[in-house]
Length: 322
Image (cartoon, rainbow, N blue to C red; front, top):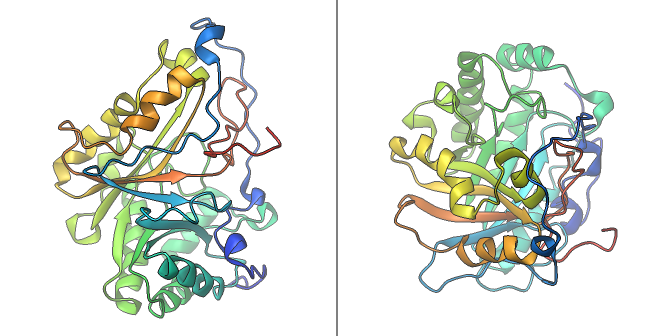
């Protein structure tokens, strides 16, 4: 077992921060000869692009390492990301206090690797060690800490497992191996932290159904929905709305009859592209009756996107570096 406390994260801001060490190098791609961008459609004057929260809309949460939502009263969930190696778990107490002071729940995404790229295993090495039980102690330590927190907690383990891009070491495993690993980890959570809800969180791609671990192991389904204007133009030859971006994943999971969240939401582009996202992301829509909450990913992406588009900045208030 590698030490859980290699990195000491001592403040709330750092406790909630997805470290840049998690960045993976992007693949160089030949520019796609798709839709030619319309300069007028890319004009950006919006300074703060946070979603409009509707009085009768669905709930809203945020992964917010920069604190842009710190003073906003109508945020239901504080999301954070946690590797299961090289982290001081005491920082969860700081995150808990931060959420409690604001009346928020905690959504904890446990990523089964180290954020230090020098410590990472290959996908096959990680799979074998998880299935062998080598990391049970890591998950147990996290679950034991969760049991001491005062905020209601949802645990999201090994997200976007059906993704084939190579972004995560646990994605693309044989479905039964992933299911066995997921069930093993969630059994530990339920043993050590009874009452914790479990989120199964595919990306929303075809084939996700093969990774479904069974109703017993899923309290909430979480999807990832991101809108990048230039990517949409190149990949889809049009600019997608939030509803269009959500529809594929939602339709694939609706049959499970579980509450659905957008566990990661982000959008970037010109005013004309972003306004529909801003206005509809928390709007109740008849096409998505099981959608209960959206959680905004308020930071720059940790990975480069295809078509040499770099790392999009999803922050509602862009960082000065951009």
